Length: 107
Image (cartoon, rainbow, N blue to C red; front, side, top):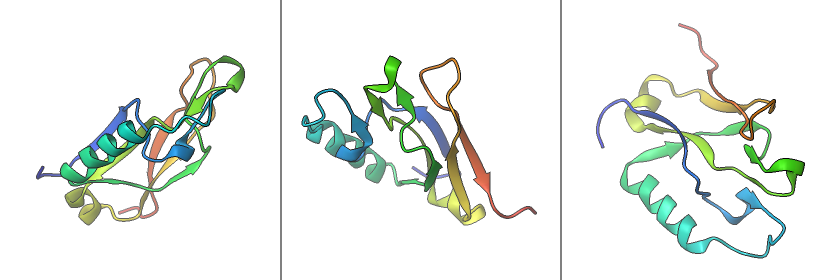
């Protein structure tokens, strides 16, 4: 994929086993994780650093939680804005937390 891309999405997939917690947390999502990571690599996208909360999506009562939303960017995006990070804000009435894309440099 070429061009300056920034993809903000609820992918409903995780990249690592620690990104999902549930009542049955022993279940590892290996196939899903492998396919999602392959998609990111094949698309030549980068998963930028995240800070704030560890999880983004919560079921009621917080027993099930995942990091299924994320911001992926192209290398061209990173060439223009290399000092970016995604910040996870608090959750209010929705089951997803808001993501904010921040840069440290102001031009």
